[in-house]
Structures are given as structure tokens and as C-alpha cells.
Amino acid sequence: MDTAPVSGDSAAQEPPRKPLSERDLQLLAFERQWWRHAGAKEHAIRETFGFSATRYYQLLGDLIDRPEAMEHDPMLVKRLRRLRASRQKERAARRLGMRP
Image (cartoon, rainbow, N blue to C red; front, top):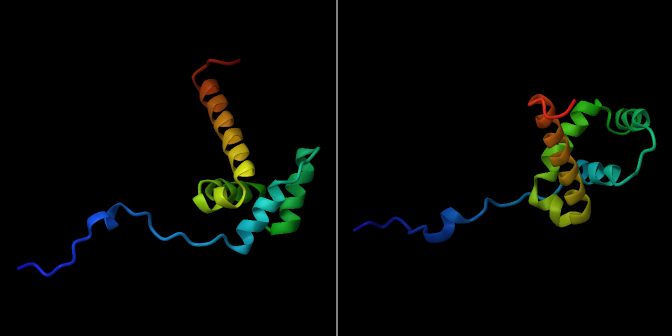
């Protein structure tokens, strides 16, 4: 007789979520701001977080894919996801020669 517990639906369950860190919350709050000049934002990223704009956008991209971020600020996360998708489509179109 097998005494192993039957997992049932537990295999289909999501892994436990970890709450957003203080840095995650700061990234989202920072991204809510509007910037008139691109250079000003890059400078503020380095001053505020101490890392490059490239690293900032890597972390932000990972963050907006997390369900916890969506729960925290759905409007912001949806807007950022739309912008990312739009940029990805534009890059793909340029690579395929669909745009000048």
C-alpha cells in the first residue's frame, strides 16, 4: 500500500508569492513620475538608485511581470506592459524591414 500523500491539485497551484521589496516599491513609485527630458530621468535613476538606466529597466521589466506588482498598482503596470509591447513590436517591424 502506498502511503505517499496524494498531491491532487497542489501541483497546479502557484508557488507562494513573496511580497514586493522596498526597492520594488521605490521603482514603481519612481516610474509613476513624468519626465519631460529623457536625460533628466537617466540622471535621476543614477542619483536615486545608484545604478545605470540599463539596469533600472531590466529590474523594472522583471518587476512588471510579477503578479504582486499588478496587485499593487494595476494601472501603472498595465501602462508599462503596453509600452513595452509597443516597443517590442516596433523593433520587430524594423528588423523585418517593415518600417524605414
